[in-house]
Length: 115
Ligand SMILES: [Zn+2]
Image (cartoon, rainbow, N blue to C red; front, top):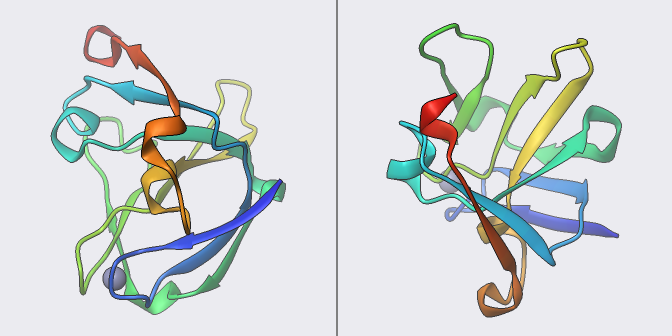
């Protein structure tokens, strides 16, 4: 289902083909601090509606993942990366979808810090 979402100040807006029923909470060095609830979509299922200029790209480690956040309000609504076989993917922070009911997301805990 196509859903829209964005950062807090409204500069960054996106549309993504996602199901908000299931998400993943990861304990890796960055997800653990940000508290994101992520789901993944192929690049084709994602569209940035506004805010390209507002995005700050944060990278660390192998620098294979773009941990974007809004430079004004600091909210991380999505990231970008690729699968091991090179398929471009987006990680959507379900918390940033419009009208999301956080209590209805089935959250799976992922032990990302050990990968
Ligand atoms: Zn913002």
